[in-house]
Length: 96
Image (cartoon, rainbow, N blue to C red):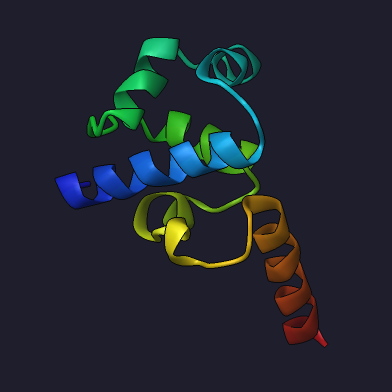
């Protein structure tokens, strides 16, 4: 993982927190991830443990790829919950 991906992770994490009206303490307590680790992610630190990233992705209903590699802030007019619903609809139609 490089600095560009760390920046995307930071932006995405901020957006998920904002969209779901959560703070670092709430997520830290729920996922049992050290608050300083989450704070580091928000400040662009390169993650050392994929397990923490997987927990975050699962919690926010996304994939590791989207959490780390896709800048979700560029998706206009959709908040995170709406985006998840949209992805489910697409996946459902692909399965038919």
